[in-house]
Image (cartoon, rainbow, N blue to C red; front, top):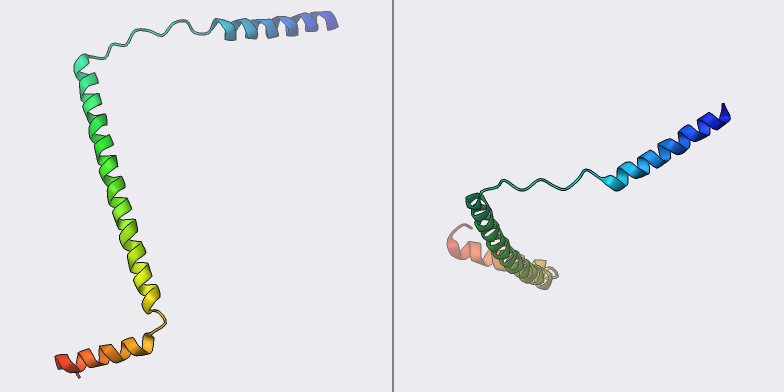
Length: 96
């Protein structure tokens, strides 16, 4: 009984190894038309261009954000002076 189970396990292991080594065979040829391939290539080029433009916009926005943060940091320690300027501007515009 033990030897039959051992042979069965050994056969199963060798069968799995043989199955994995044989694979599924060669891939079938591609039936895609040349028009579809050209359209896909053009789409890919358009997406790459959009990605480059978006990257440039992101870089510009990051630079503008850094400038605004620097402006905020520069005036963050002057709230009383800024409140006085706002008050003077309100008086000059007729709001006060």
